Image (cartoon, rainbow, N blue to C red; front, side, top):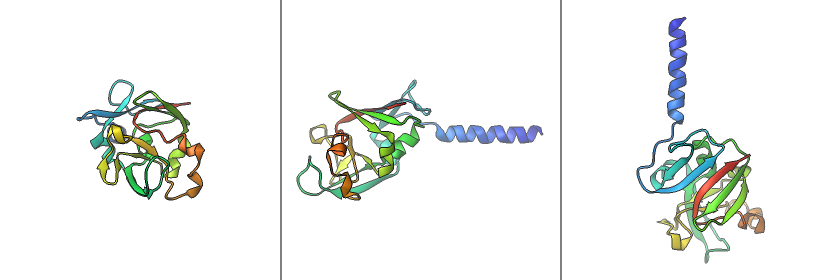
Length: 164
């Protein structure tokens, strides 16, 4: 019985270790706060660019109201970021460097929404809406190309607060 208990404890510790979020080694570009269970700096989760690029992502070539012609955005899927931090809330407040914020339902992460880190294969500078931009999959679903989703498409993102 003792060996079974030890084995269960070992499995539990392994699962917990797998959920641990590594600490950023480069400049922090994203902080996630609120209803999250995986943190790496006090009660928040911080990401550097290398950490974000390790997450499952996608590329999408599309037109947007903020770009000229078709451009290719790429970056981690929003749902992968939320999974990495163990997000349990139903709402997100996405905040930009200038403190502009938009309320985004967490269910929007199911739409293959990405946190773009690159445009046309190049890192997004602050001048070009970077370092991070919430991009909806306008290339996969034309019904998303409207004001409702445009207003949620925050650029120069610095923080996501998970609420409710």
